Length: 132
Image (cartoon, rainbow, N blue to C red; front, side):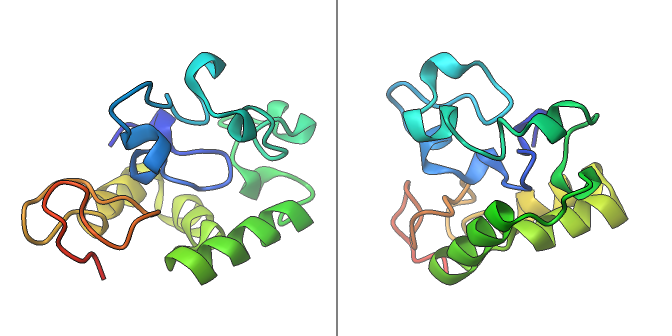
């Protein structure tokens, strides 16, 4: 797992469908905008003026943490995909990016074929094994 693929909100871009697509894959939130979907280019969190002042640029260091937009995003991902941005951020903050990345690699690995799972699909994109 590449640390630059962890978005400011705590999203692991490697498990995003946009990043995993074969045609014109997204480079992740911290990557170049040319291949990003429009909604990602316009993301309120990725374009947050407060975050642009902070290095490495994670929401947990923002004076407004956790803002309304982050809470809404977290709620949507917890409900639809069983993943929490806020839990991810807390893990990065307390245990570090390396620990978080290692944990994510195992958490999002297909138990059947070993490929990277996608948070946006309930099955492995390669072998179609249910991921939950």
